[in-house]
Amino acid sequence: MRKPLTLPFTQSLFPFTLLLLAWTTPSAAQVGHPPDASPFRDLKAGHSITPLFGYVGGSGGPLGVGPHKGTTIGLRYDLRTASTIQFGLGYARGNLERLVVNPFVALANRTSGPFEQTTSFVDLSVQLNLTGGKSWHRLAPYASLGAGLAFGNADVASDSSGYEFGNKFYVAPAIGTRLFITDALHLRADVRGLFWNLKYPDSYGREPVEEPGTPEEPNAVKPQGSLSEWTLTPMLQVGLGYVFSW
Image (cartoon, rainbow, N blue to C red; front, top):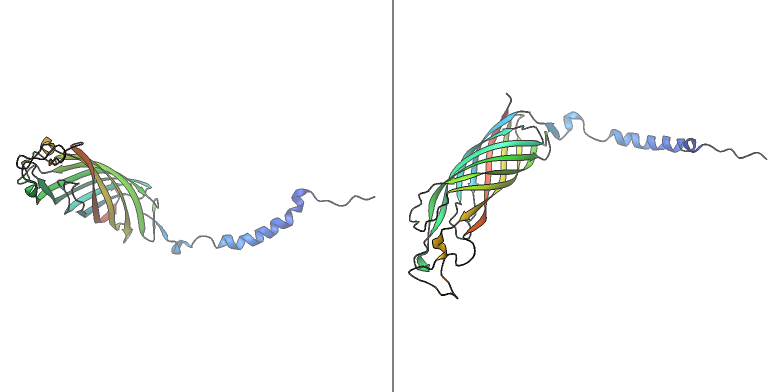
């Protein structure tokens, strides 16, 4: 008796392979965009300079004595502007405001102001460009983390408590985007949070001479707990940047 004709396994798959290739080839040809229609564009490699205008918000911490609510002007320099990882150096200065808390007087007269608090900011940042070395529809969104120093002027009128903002280390996470008008010219905007530690004088822990409280109901500015606290100060910055090569 003659044995039935059988095909090797690979030969039996051959017709199905042809059908699969015939079905997928047109679909594969439709994937992607023609170069002139792609939403992604290569960014110009180099460095950038960006004059910045900013606004600092917040409340100055629970007591209002930290610098807040005011405009800033500044300048930013960036390295590796067309890379996934970018480095920046920034400077800004602004006339902000703060309250003055007098721990020695009656509670009704304790808080006064606001008073001007001139503050300068210097920081270094590492920026993650979310679209790498390209823009998407001319947008190049990013997230960054910075660290720096804030310098506050020492003379604030009418503050006899011994409190000074002084020089503060801060960290500043941020999110933002660049909008490329041309290959070199772009708008930059981001929102950042400045985290710094406010340190209060010992006078904030004492009872006011004019209106002392009781152990059960103290009237000190900070009757218990630490005389320092971390606060968050939001900051918005916008600028017009230019990319150049050396």
